[in-house]
Amino acid sequence: MTEKKECQDLAVVRRAASVCAKHGVPVLPACPPHGEQIGHGGNAFCLKTTLATGEGEVEVVVKQLLPSRGLSLALGLGELVSEAALLARVAGVAGVPRLYGIVLDPPALVTSFDGPHTLFEVVTQRPRRVSDEAVVRAVRQVCCAVATLHARRIAHNDIKSNNVVVRQHPDGTLTPCLIDLGNSALLGQAIFPPGQLRWEDHRFLAPELVAGGQSSAASDVFSLGHMMATFVKFCKPHSEAGQLLGRLGAQATAKCPAQRPLLQELIACLQGGLGRDSPHCNLS
Image (cartoon, rainbow, N blue to C red; front, side, top):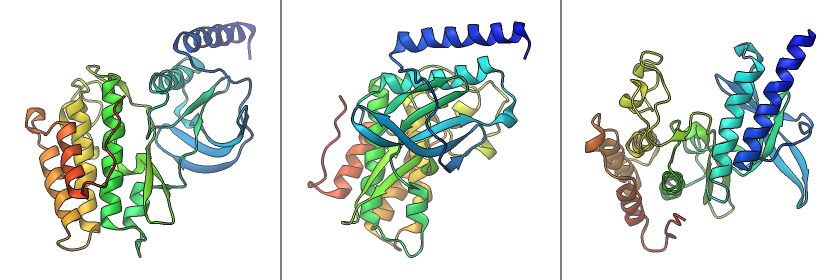
């Protein structure tokens, strides 16, 4: 590495540290020890390992960018700092990962480990060990988490069942957590340049978002609806839970954003389908 490159990288790291301080993002001195790879996508891969904290040793997920993307330190670090800043903004929100911090060089994002399986894996496994009602309850909890993000002016922009991890409990219930805020942005921001994506390849995203439009509560509702609709075929034939998910999924995936139900309406309908014994959302 040339002296000029070293100076440039040092300046990038210093700027990133300043942004982290502004947004309350903890900067970790070094990456936790490498562990088991638990996931990867088009942009990054994730490892499960442990981190020593003031509360003791905790299980964490370390997100690192794929070297094959060939990003400069400035671009790669910028992506993770932006995600970390959004996680700091939603600190304490139930149903999203807890931010432990960021490593600046090499760039890595460290968050809580919130489950060994995705909601997709749990719903589609055969034989399935959770009831249709447990799936509806988990979907409702995801909707509540999204509603809390919206209350803090954040759109997720990447909601799908593979981006929901779950913990399964002995009584058959699920605790879901909506992960991967890498595409998240403030409501009203456009995140995809026109022509970058084809909707045929990203059917879980709202058409207006893929076309370069602004992210909105309605665009997240579309993705939630797509997730509900895909679960229907895995429910028992003619079950009330399956019919509820199918009906709400069809309404929420209307091509016109104005024709989609409000997120609070989806939550209320899911609540009604679960009965009165299900806890209400806390949207603080």
